[in-house]
Amino acid sequence: MRIPLLASAAFLAVFAASAAYAHAFLDHAEPRVGSTVSTAPKEVVLTFSQKIEPAFSSVEVSDGNGARVDQGKPNVSATTMRVGLKPLQPGTYRVRWQVLSTDTHSTEGNFTFQVGK
Ligand SMILES: [Cu+2]
Image 1: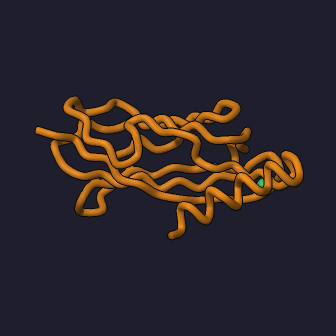
Image 2 (image 1 turned 30 degrees about the vertical axis):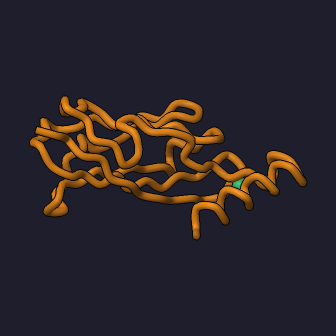
């Protein structure tokens, strides 16, 4: 029941206080979290709920064998972090991100997406 707890905690934080308690959570991703895409994406784009610090934010994308398939250094602009991808074969890929938001709080998470045949 982690997700409902997190969601309600985030809601309460926003409701009760202000941006002071709002860390940078993943708002949405492209490819979408848990999705299957028919065409291999050329990049992963993560959008966060708050601005993030380029120097202390990173993302790694790996294939089913744990091999890195991202192009290295991500590009960060305001609430968005994107990283290019090597050509992907059909399979499951995991995205691991870690960001420092401008309120100096660090958050991290991971999800998978699939490239279909
Ligand atoms: Cu915070």
